[in-house]
Image (cartoon, rainbow, N blue to C red; front, side, top):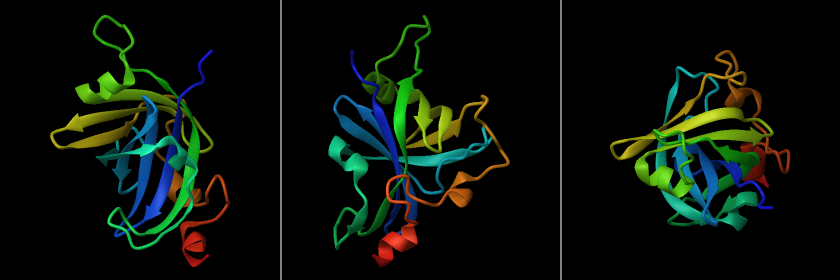
Length: 164
């Protein structure tokens, strides 16, 4: 039996504070930088910039990245869990995650500490959008980026990690 693929959302205080949403696909973490973080409101479209793949080991990284071309600054694991691929083609057949990303549309069910429910990544030209799917976990009145600022691993805020 194969285990479910993982996802992680790392809050990264680099040049700009942003959320790195990473999904395990074919042995690496496919990554999108989401400047304003995930929204639980299905009417909100968040910019998601596709970035460099990361090794799976990076999923549990927390700390302060020293001077680096990649992006110096504090990093915490804001959320983590497993996901289910919900992407299907016109015949309702499952689409492989790597193919879905190549095709520009990837729909997933997140099972995290903070984020649960279905989400869709859709490419729009050079960038992507991350949108919460209307489901029982959608809640336009809750902003988890404000109400849940702490790491799911260390319990630290990004400011506490930066000061450590």
